[in-house]
Image (cartoon, rainbow, N blue to C red; front, side, top):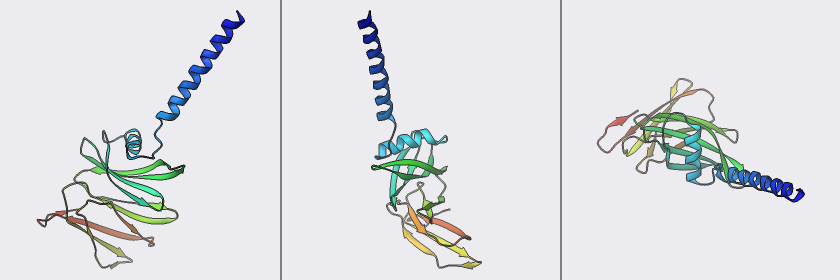
Amino acid sequence: MKKKKLMIALAVVICVATAFLYFLNSTPKGDTIASRERMLNTAISTGNEWTIAKELELEGYIISGAYSTDNKSTLAIFEPAGDGNYKFITSTNRSDEEVIVSGAVINGEWYDLIWFNGAKTEYAEITYTINGQVQDTLRYNTDDMDIISIKNPEKEYSIHVAYYDNDGNKYE
């Protein structure tokens, strides 16, 4: 009888340990693109089946530009969690036809983050207005549809972003 109880207890311990190990291994760690995509599918209520198209490493953080099967786009921020892992922090979501203009504080510094997953574009023009003064327009090559990040020390400003394709069509 003691042997039977011992065997049952041992079986329960093995089952609990197996379930715990399965749970640990199935939780995305953010260390790969596929893992970050799983995090997006869990964390973002709008959009289905997220696919990461572009990533940018910014002071240890990962900024992911992704699109969904239902024509949504997102800029998602992943914070380092140690041991090469990352945790999802936040995202800015739009339809594919819209330019995403977002921002984030990374290591105490503000960054403007800009991405467009719509039509293939050639360049982007970004114009800041600070204290009522229009600044020189910044121009970025967007042939590769990369995420644009601009470190911005200003507290109050406005930003205007326009993307242009090879035919001169404008996307704002």
